[in-house]
Amino acid sequence: MKSNRLNTLTNGIVKSNPTFRLVLGTCPTLAVTTQALNGLAMGAAVTFVLLCSNIMISLLKKVIPDRVRIPAFVVIIATFVTVVQMVMKKFLPSLYDALGVFLPLIVVNCIILARAEAFASCNPVLDSALDGLGMGFGFTLSLTFIGIVRELLGAGSFFGMPIGSLGNVSMTVFILPAGGFLVYGTLMALVNFLTGLAENRKYDSSHKEKKNEKEANV
Image (cartoon, rainbow, N blue to C red; front, side, top):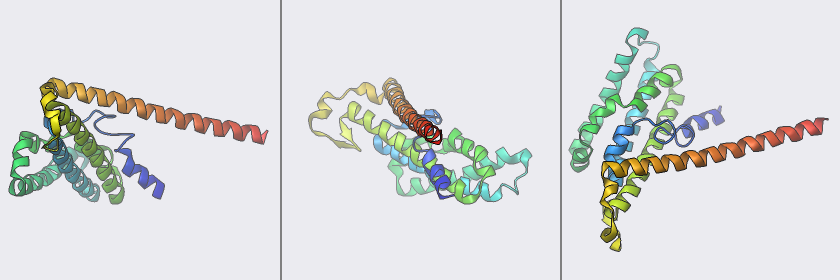
């Protein structure tokens, strides 16, 4: 049971990373990652909404009729998005302005709707919370890392802090849409290559163990 829950938590970080493996939420990924801080803030907002909506949907799954489950999910998600908007507007106005329209659009973010439909609506509360936390953390890591790369190459800074003479040789294209696609595609290819390599090694190791067991039994 503990190992299953650990797998649920870590699944969204690597194996089913929503950004690099499932290719979900591409629009905000490309739009807000011109700076690392923006990526971190968007990821944190999505994580909060994912966690809270997964818990609430799991609690109400037996109460919500099948015919209206999607509208009900959207209402629940929209409630938590509104909370995030109000808090961010009050305490982090600069980030609120930087994220712009992509903050309210979390309501229809395919990652959140997909986890609500595929996981939270048919699993216990604790598992749903772990799934939301893992998926959100994976999304946050991805956006932050893309933002770091784009900001370093495009503006010569790290979380808004200039890095020596790097700013003098920065390439503005990386904070433009074309640079976003380039960085996203390159990192996606790298993550998928490394993940595939790890999975192949795991398979080979497992296959070798089974072969050794067979030979021992013979």
